[in-house]
Length: 100
Image (cartoon, rainbow, N blue to C red; front, side, top):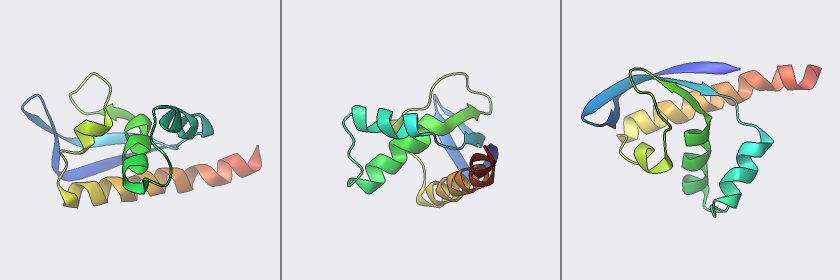
């Protein structure tokens, strides 16, 4: 499942602010990959930021991967919006996973 998130201030990339992001639900492989990158789950904010970065499928007007450090430049307002959107994407995927 994918979920579109609209940020208020936007994600700054190369001098432009991008406000529309598409997130997908996380998979077990995402959790493992974040841990393999050396981010432990007990580092909750760092872990969550890395996991969300992996699950961003699309950013309006930007072709490239989003890194955790790029998300560090979000305002707290936008970070909270992005986290809520991620929670929705994760929640929307649960019924689908249960029916498989």
